[in-house]
Amino acid sequence: MSLVYYYFGSRAGLLEATLVYADEESPSSTLSIESGNGSAYAKLEKAMLAELGGSRSWRSRAIVWNELTASAVFDEKMRKHVDAVNGKWAESVASFIACGRQDGSIRQDVDPHEEADLLTSLLDGLLLRLLTKALPRRRAVELLRSMAKERLQPQKSK
Image (cartoon, rainbow, N blue to C red):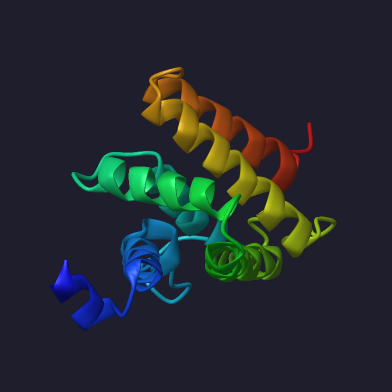
């Protein structure tokens, strides 16, 4: 236990470092509009779907995220850290939505920040349901794709 205090200063320091690590390792935190080919919408969708599993570490990262956000309900200090990570995540998603508006892969009439809040909130809920096995991954993917398509993609003219 003394090593925890040596390296992190306190239990809260350890939890904060764990939160930062989980955030840095999440697919949507490493989004880069410049990386790869394809539209901003396609890149955003790929990162959001990666949050729902597929990698070996997704479950551990999701458990850490849910545990720390749950503790933030009662811990004001942790709440500030969780809010900061949520804000960074939503801002990243909003920037992809804004880029998608520019490249035509996302509708012009959507508000990037509003849609980012909705999308990240949906993902949080889907992750919790996946962790508790209340929802199969296939269905979570369907729901995410359906919502994103409905709210973000330009409507095809008939």
